[in-house]
Amino acid sequence: MGNGRKTVLITGGSRGIGRAAALHFAKEGWQVVITAHKSQNLLWETKKEIQAMGASCLAFLGDVGSMADCRRLFSQIKETFGDLDVLVNNAGISYIGLFQDMTEEEWDRMIRTDLTSVFYCCKLAVPGMIHRRQGKIINVSSVWGVCGASCEAAYSAAKGGVNAFSRALAKELAPSNIQVNALALGAMDTEMNQWMEEEERNALQAEIPAGRMGKPEEAAEMIFSLATSPDYLTGQIIQFDGGWI
Image (cartoon, rainbow, N blue to C red):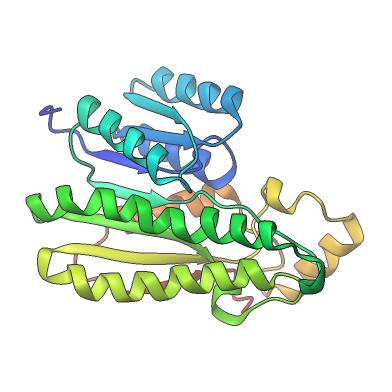
């Protein structure tokens, strides 16, 4: 606090894209806050890696789909680092299966984790940003929020909500010099896609003009670019998909 260093919160920062982004910000000398819901060991490992780079890190174990947990998280951030400069809403789960097979509980969990968590974290981060008249919010979304995917109706609905929320909030916060953008990712080579058989994977990659899946490090680089982009960039849904959609 008061050391001139910038602070970023990355939800779902213990693995995949969140972890890659956390390490990228740490490498650039930022103070990093990471959260995980269940993967405690991975969370502490990521924290150690960040600290080994000489960056400060606050690791928080909790559910960003719960307002009580989010309040606890933000009071710890305030105590440790002060206000956030950048919020990266990255926490998310996927559900692949027929719409008819999805239970109400699974729907509720999907919307809470992938969409409501974005609302909670923004609600708690924005007052400090308004007070300082600066801040950037990056919502990690999916191309399925743009065009929908068969057997991923709930996931598509949640990410479509994130995209619409990002566009609307950007308009509301622009007069306060706060930028909001969404990064709509295509097929990324992360744990979320490890379930695919080699044949399915090859068929998918053949559909992507770039001929491959995206790497977590590439998504991390893109997130960092948005965090440091000119203030005139706001209200955008940026598709990061190798020309796929």
